[in-house]
Image (cartoon, rainbow, N blue to C red; front, side, top):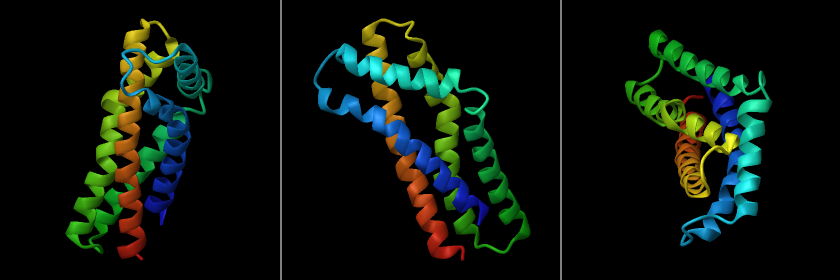
Length: 149
């Protein structure tokens, strides 16, 4: 199924993001992250959001395909309403979060134009967003693997 494949791709992307994001976790009590941690995270987001274009647009395309696949499933009427409604929340929520905040914050991190305190806040926000997105998309994938066969 297309939606499940898209979710799997997005989970893989989130996993790669979280490899870098997770560097903030040992420094929860610090006001400002150490410079090597910020440099690593910011360098990753510079590559992932800016210098990798047009490849970075692939993620947005996969998100659009996932939502389109859900729309088609809804319009065909073959699936229970609760499956589609839950799927829209579990997949649409992370996509909306990415569009509204996460991508913007990641681009700012990659630019390194802010002071270290703001970069720390952005890095922690992106990490939290990605944790929420991973949980939601994992739930989406589990739901579709269990019920949409």
